[in-house]
Image (cartoon, rainbow, N blue to C red; front, side):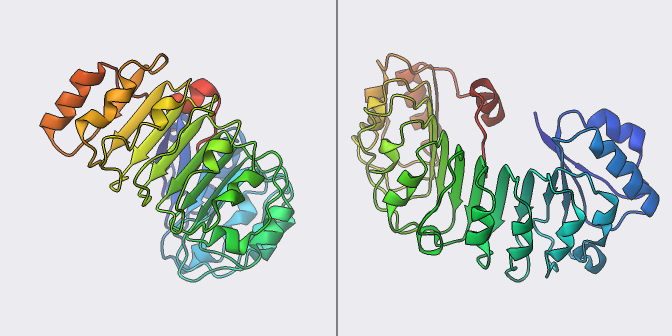
Length: 322
């Protein structure tokens, strides 16, 4: 299972090497010594799938001068590096960087320097608008994209990413659901607390969709997923407007659904009756607010709980973005 490893000087490289096998992120919030930067860079060169993250309030880290020690780094995050004001120092990285996370900072940043990278495969952007259209245009090979706190279809009326298979929209807005149809290659889609989204008519027309995550949307009923022949898993978390016994009936029409997670829900137990005899459903997790209702739902469905997100993604070769 992936995890986060925190480092600080002095860095025990031998111990870090042992624990790095399943680490997704190595991070620090205070500058390291030059010797430790060199050692860490050499170690990460042998682990290209590990992300390096700098975060916190340190002014020196916010200059990104330390990147001179990491010319071959493939994955980098500045999420919560609060005092970062300029992305131009990213030029110190190799041109073949594949993942960048331009996350939360004190003030919005100009993304124009990031458009110098043309081979990004995964990108996460939080609230930074300036230069975003140009950045996406410069990276048509993107496979995974996460956008936070952005008016997506207003800022990006046209999106041309022919290889995009994973998209996560969080805490922004999407007034025109049809915008999603510009990305028919999507296999994973997360819509989390997205404002202005009033229906999922476009979602059920995504032909390759295998995993759908709906979180904190204001929908009171899900559409008919009978045409979604690729859909294998659906997560409905904090969908508190779903309260009617028939709210999930359309989802039960998905012919190949194998896993279902419904949590932080106000649904009645009988909303799960349509799933009782579903021909392919193998795993279900339910959180209905009380132990009694959870127990009744479990007795009704008689399924094992869903697999961990990372396990499910690995099983079906899916890229999960947050």
